[in-house]
Length: 446
Ligand code: PHE
Image 1 (cartoon, rainbow, N blue to C red):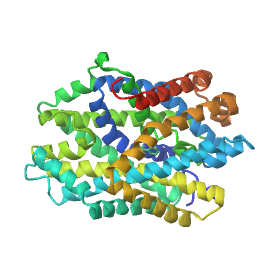
Image 2: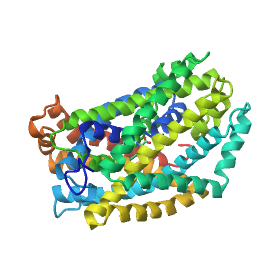
Image 3: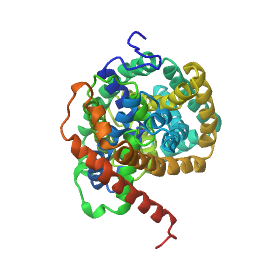
Image 4: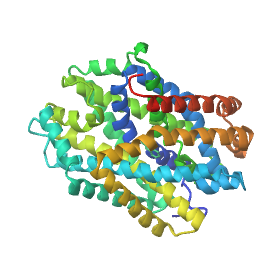
């Protein structure tokens, strides 16, 4: 760990940070969640709203989180304590650690499916012309086999633990430096293949031809919670990753790069999935099974389909891994910073405890859906709201701007950012949460 400058660890370079933070952001949310949400919420209308949410809420919150992290050089709970001593703001950090814990539990189960599918692809299960019904049966067969799912989930936990135990520079950054370029290469290859398939153009049309009549309040909140999840915001991952960033780096520029790469990758994954679907004559209505049910039916029809199947599920595994290590890092950093535990001990113990929570997720889809509803639909938005209120009203934008301008770095529009984070973002997030609660609580049919 030659580049480590403090005992907590730090990124070797700004590029190392960008790869690791982009690795956190780019995950199943982009490749599994984004196409799934887009297919449920009107295709291009969702995509347009998503882009707006990223630009006017996501990127500003990203700057806020990174500034909190870097200025304190601490993980979320300690960071809020340092900036607002003797107050209850640390609870925002604590909520983040809890969210990280619960998200990791359900995330690892889905990641476990991806490992299972990678194995099936390698062993040639998708070669013999799989029909939609057969594919559905395979997906249900995997999910309905507790021993197998728990095994794959456990395997995935071990992979994440092995990376995080290596530390910030020697584990997370090193893994990201290898995995992210491989990921990018696979994704571009698959997207080019899909868009050039006969009939693939309809998928591009579905993704980019906006019909605003499809925009409802539900689509707006779906787009915002998807943006928070996809950019790893609202639970302290970016506070934690920012805390390992050197002060000489241009923070807003790095944050913008991460946010825009995440968005570009979501679009690119849409360009991989929808053309492939339309080319195969399938309709994008499959829900969460989209990438697990529909895609296996089309590999067979492609030249070199096995290679593409292996590449696709390897892509999903990599995306999941670089994200889950950031979730595990938030939990680990909390125990290392707050309780002065050794990293090795914290990561095995809490990786293990989290796995124990993943087991019921793997066994009962109702429990998994409940965690997804609480932590995907609400917790990240609530966390994001409090982060805006904290930076806008307690720490004050001037404090964060001074941090972003540290060591003479400059970035345009930071005073406008201050206004967004103080007024606009919290109001938008609050309205969307209130609306979400309202539609969840009102009696059906009203
Ligand atoms: N951003 C990740 C994804 O898109 C998920 C994630 C959420 C990771 C929150 C860390 C924190 O899959």
